Length: 95
Image 1 (cartoon, one colour):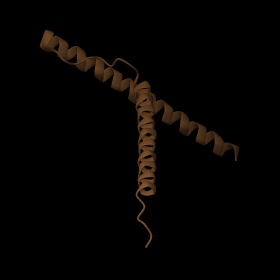
Image 2: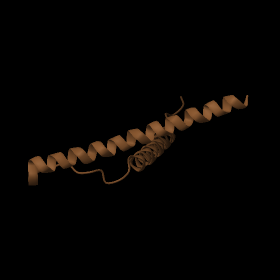
Image 3: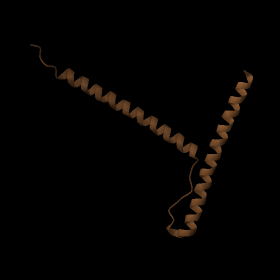
Image 4: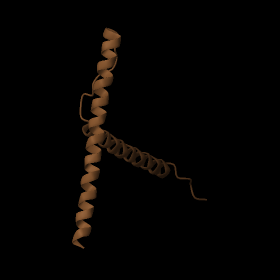
């Protein structure tokens, strides 16, 4: 049973190393692409090196998405409230 935990820990460690290596490759790719374009195109170059870590960018996107979901839920609730109020004000008279 204890060996199973060791294997799981090793697997997680390997996955974390893989993610770190991938991020490092992305930073290197950005640096090389920026350097090559700036050397070849000079002042016309448009590429820029990444300004913040990818993990920070991802976390900001997650926060923005969650805020957007909250705003959508609030908007739907407001519309439902408006519908209920309208229905109360415009009741059909009972015959």
